[in-house]
Amino acid sequence: MREAAAAVERRSGGRGAMLGAWLLLWGALALGSRGETAPLRRADDSTGRCTYTFTVASPVEARCPDASGVPELRAELAALAARLSRLEGRERGTGGSGPRGAEVGGVRDPQHAASAARLEAAYSELLRAKSRLEEEKGRLEREKEELGRRLESSTQEIARLRAGSVPTHAVPGPAAAPRWDPQPLAYQELQSERTEVPASRLLEETALSRPGSQDSGCGELVWVGEPVVFGRAESIAGKYGVWMKDPEPVPPFTRETTWRVDTVGTEVRQLFQYEAAEQLARGYPAKVHILPQPLESTGAVIYRGGLFFQPRRSRTVARYDLRGETVTAEREIPGAGYHGQYPYSWGGYTDIDLAVDETGLWVIYSTEKARGAIVLSKLDPDTLEIRRTWETNIRKRGVANSFVICGTLYTVSSYSAPNATINFAYDTATSTSRALSIPFENRFRYLSMVDYNPAERQLFAWDSFNMVTYPVRLSQA
Image (tube, rainbow, N blue to C red; front, side, top):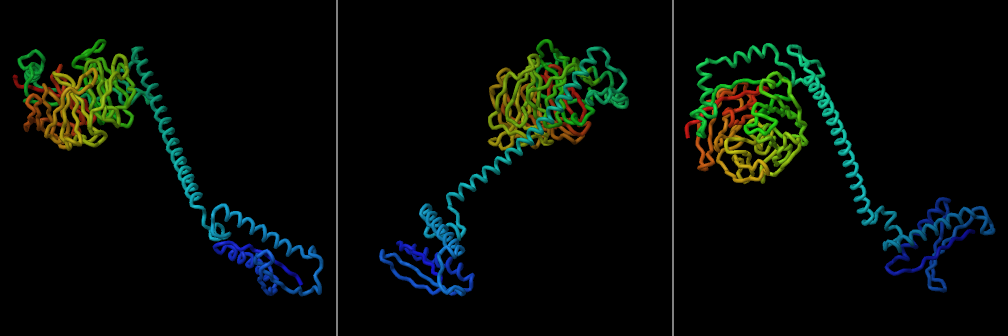
């Protein structure tokens, strides 16, 4: 007969009973696998510990040999005792109610589970951040390559211009920038038709708009003439744009120096410089400035030797010095909407629009406080500090564009209607607005920029690839 015994110490709260049950379960499983029955007997020993004893008859042995003759049972009991010791140690370490509390039921320590969850979340966030950084790195590398190609193309073109080898009729090869292509013959013929007006009318308009004439002083806008085309952008980047002259230039630049920016794209940095408007019409710049920050939309102006523009995705205004080729001033416009919050009706992220008139530099925008109405502020051209602000009752999204003449803000009714009007005026001297109906022609049906040049007494505009001017007439003050 073989005999196996297991002693289990009594503990408070029923732990001894649970451990005894655990031992009996494993012993029964070990012996039951052999098809034997095990009578159970329980009694206290001399030390007061509860002793469980179960016996089973050997089917083949008449008497018990030495204990070493049953290594299989001894191994099972040894494994069971080791298992019980580990479970008891775990119970003491974790404060569980029994050896199965943290193992058999599959319940993990809440602190360990929370820590594991935090580590998994942090690891996932690191993977996402790595992916974003890789995408940003790829984008920056592509932009670097594109800027390198543009710079190389510009350098080759400038070198060719300085060498005096600019073709007069031949179209440049594929390496040349598309926007600098000479005008096609069909366009030159069409341009000739556009500028053909009676001599008497041309002389009258020139006299009325020339500074120093009887109408050279400030007054109210009473008339806008027909558009005159000076040039055309041939690439898709020139569908929208801005072109301008400095009414108060700083040497070496003159009033004839012409500037242009094609504003289609997310990284608009190129500022093209032309010695005169005629060079702009031919399509070959004298120099290409690469701005240190990309600009947003068509609200830029040239004034007193600086390019004033809105850096992309910001409510700030910056001054780029044309001689030093650096940004010399930058200032945030408090509360100004940007990147599509309060644009003109045609869109194009035209939230912040800069303007120049006889009195200085202006910024046109809107704020949440103004509920989308046009806000007009006068700026210091050196520091960009706001000197004074006016809040109008003209909805910015309700007009296509605006400009300032003699301290009065004027708005254009539509960017696409062929027969639009100058429909509102706001006088900063009286802080009052009035409705107008001055005819304004959108010849090419997509007006994206209008600015006033006080030195030439003309409007400069960009109308669907075309750079045009409008003569204007002011009433006598």
